[in-house]
Amino acid sequence: MATYKNGINGAISGKIGNVVGASWRGVDYLRILADHSNRTFSEKQQNQHFLLGMVSSWLKPLKYIIEIGYQLFVTGKTPMNQCISYHMKNAVTGNTPIEYLIDFAKVIFSRGELLVPFIKEILTLLDAVLHIKWENASTSIFSNEDDRAIFIIYKS
Image (cartoon, rainbow, N blue to C red):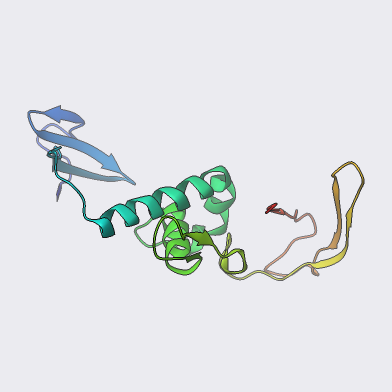
């Protein structure tokens, strides 16, 4: 892949023959079209593809929260890519697609400096409503009076 600044007539976008010009995160680049041959993947590659798909599809509904929670710890990666990478390495157990499980104790949706709020009470009401009372930490450089909590709840 080649990058360039202000080509002869500015940035190139689109396909020219088998070369594609595009921009990602403010970087203009050229790349060649992928060769879509009928090659077969090894079992290890198939497992990795399955694992990536499983983790990506599991995290996709939480993308908005992940974009906030991982925004400070990205260097060259998007917050979502950083989150997927973390979970593939640390939060998945098993060695084959049949055995893959997510270890919820190792799941992290936010990284960085954050004061832990004080959860006062959690009640499960009869109509399947969860009632959570919490108190924000005192105002500091890490928290404000109007901070809101986001709770992610999984039912197994």
